[in-house]
Length: 176
Image (cartoon, rainbow, N blue to C red; front, side):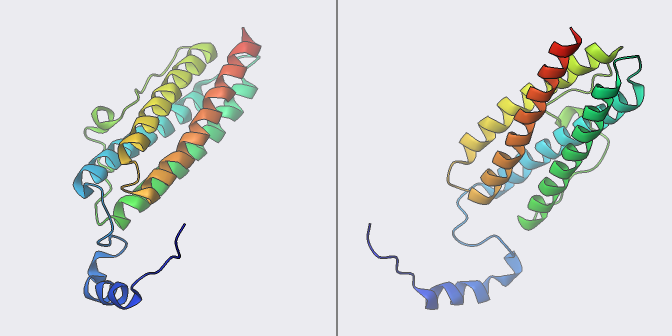
């Protein structure tokens, strides 16, 4: 490996002349509009997940529902954190996060399914987590090295989505 040498003078000139672009520098290699569009889809996915988990938290009933209710509430809070991270990243990329409820379900990769009992709620949430896992894995491959910050954020979210899926699978096994 050779010695790292950067032309700091040029870096400083570019930084000063393009300050209005915020975090987006000349080294940003991804298709900015496409990334913002995909991130808005991910934002919609996370919002739909928050709504589904919140409904499941409030609607879960029965003698064995306490563990599931606690999991639903925790997952709702974590999905909300994901949505906040995504909205922040969209604005860092000079985009606008789309919180418009109109079309939310069609922008989302996952579905809003209410479920009729705790078991069906757990299954619907596990289904949604599996969609997120596969979708976010594809987004990471698509981003490659073109936007390492967004890729890392998606990787961090993916890690939690995998934990959610495992939690839900374990709960289903205990309740079966």
